[in-house]
Image 1 (tube, rainbow, N blue to C red):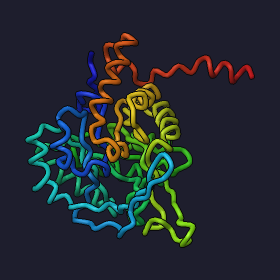
Image 2: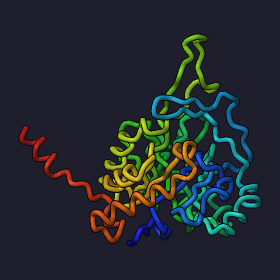
Image 3: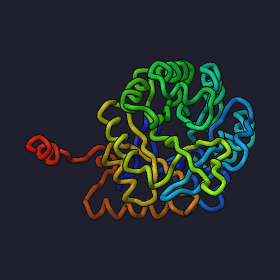
Image 4: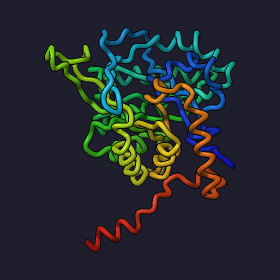
Length: 312
């Protein structure tokens, strides 16, 4: 059976990607997981320079999920190229680098630098982190800002460009269209939902940043709906994420329209999840006599439901 999929010029051996922010830079998991067996590893977000992020508390467990306000702590692009990328190349990983910027120029400069780095296979533009005040989300919540960042990066790199969209907007499909118009090869969605938690005994926020991003199974049905909407709005591939923990979850996203998926929060629960997901996908394809996984993408049948809705 053929599990390979195409994202712009990038061919993935299977649809499973390790999501940015939940897998370090990839090398941290190398002793537990064969990184070359994954569709791709998406790096922790990189600015030009190092970043400390927010002080503790930065993670809070919630029902069926978690809140985080890490604040995009990171080592910066130059240390990534010098310290992490050589090992990722040696391990045979497919590397998608998540880049962050406080300004449009920072995104463009990061794209230039990484385009010259051996072993970088695509760029994911983080324009959707909900828990930093500067840059990022400012671009991601503006149609013009989304277009400008994607278009600016597109002009300086031959690598596939994949903006990561925020769910914290009214109509996410319009942002996918703005990204496509700007020259994106694909879009990834969703990033976390803006949320907060309060300690009722102290009446203080549980996160030092007060608000953070909600991820995990609690958001999955909303994320599936947003992937479905974006798939209908654009011709470029959609990469889905949000609460994926089982093979059924992967398949649901793909049937809704995702060409590939990213797994994030579930890594904290089960670092060995990847083989289980692949086994479940393989079993489904055998039971349904599917030879090419790509044939499943966007295969949702809504005809009966639509007829029932019209008649009612």
